[in-house]
Image 1 (cartoon, helix red, strand yellow):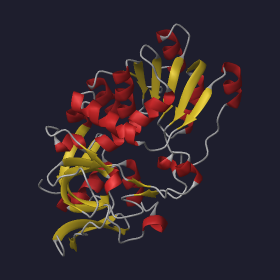
Image 2 (cartoon, rainbow, N blue to C red):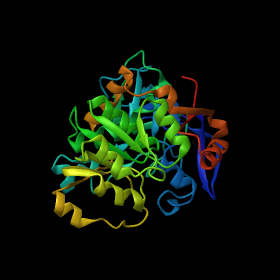
Image 3 (cartoon, one colour):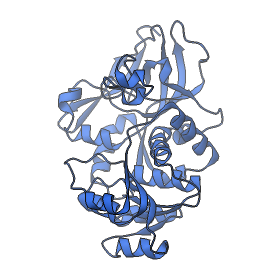
Length: 345
């Protein structure tokens, strides 16, 4: 595939992408080239679009990481992967030498590179990545559904770190894409799940997926959670809203010795009711990205239908229309997950 010509979308700053010819990068030793089928637009990509990460990525970057595709070529020393095999990429490259890596926590490596931000990503027809980032897919898995594996792995990590068990009560604060996926994984675990969300369009999507929902602007969230749980509160609370009202609610709805999982990345340091932590012996759990086992769990959940992929995917655009797709997602109050069809696979 030396000098093979492909099409790629480059972020150029000022809320703009250009779709241009590029040259595929042949895989070196320990690397794999993946022909990309689909790539989702995530919240981090929207931060890039708004210029919030310009100092990190510059104006020559191909972004994108929520992807699916097939093996196109393998480099020297790569075993167990065959051309044409359906795969996804776990877009983390660790250093192997820092204290976190040495402790076995490579996903929070002190020198972590996030592929698609710190390197070029999947909004290009062929993406070359380290072989250790590859996860194989079942042969019958639809590749548009497979593009949901990366964000579903985030949710799998969040739920696993919470220790949520079947029969427990969970409240998800924030019904955006990650919040809905957290709710689906929590439901798959056997928990009773309620989603708190203020956006009426997101509430409708959550309800269409069979979730109990509360709009805290219309209903007293704490009173309703207490009513549903016999005044106990939620055993696990996932804060996915990234808002101060969400942080206020997370401590108010938690049961005694409840676990609060901080999923959202807050733009500013929120104010947290530490007295409530003392009074109810609460636990606060930080979560970041995922580990290999979370990817495997996400693959299994999507393969089993535990994620309602068809409802979750609200629109698909070709790579040539990536600019319009970002503009539409930025303006749309109705979209849940927008996919880019990068290439014909």
